[in-house]
Image: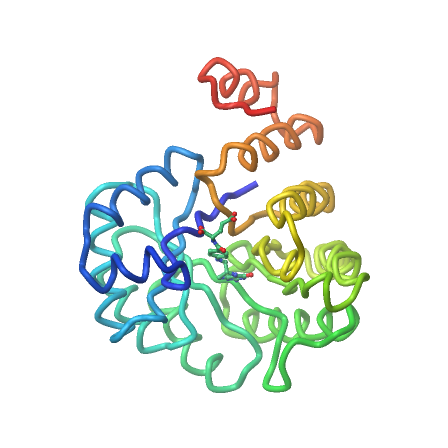
Length: 263
Ligand code: THG
């Protein structure tokens, strides 16, 4: 499973502060540690600052000075995404598009121009639908649009947007059904953040970690997660071993030898 490191997000107060102070050492240290934890992409989000586009450009340059891992450009604004994609070295991921009309129209030309991978959210101008059926329908609409635009579906990660358990006890199960159906019907990849599911519950990391392993058993292809959290990365490595996605147990044993596995 592809790990997308979540920590360079301006929603986190310490990161917001670092962006404000242009504290390049802080940002570069977090980038390095996420890469060392196994991130295949590093998510970057500067939405909470003063000037999202300016901050994004600064962040992309700062991170690419120290790691080879490509970036996942996390913004709702096509203008900000363009600024990041223009200066990004290598193939980026765009986070995200959805069936919201203005966002879709602004982002589609960028995906084509820069040939990036893309995360597609199953929401539209009416928000996130409550039922699995509605979200699967929107996934179908997104796949149709992307197909029509000749965008390679191998590069598309659909995010069915998990809602908090605290709002509905069936929200995780609804999400698992979305993962299974979207894969079956459209053959595209799937992705999720982990934190929404545990919103307003105690011991959130515990819920997030077990949520991730169940998602993996449903074949989820990528997760936006804290790759500096050794318990979480150990869960990923161990679950891949159990799902026969680790030939000769190579990754598990390597992680063990590197003292990277945590009980
Ligand atoms: N889907 C998509 N994009 C997303 C999300 C999603 N982008 C934003 C978000 N959700 C994923 N990113 C974060 C980033 C930070 C945190 C949660 C989600 C966060 N971090 C705390 C910290 O680092 O201090 C706590 C970490 C922890 O306790 O594990 O809360 O769903 N497409």
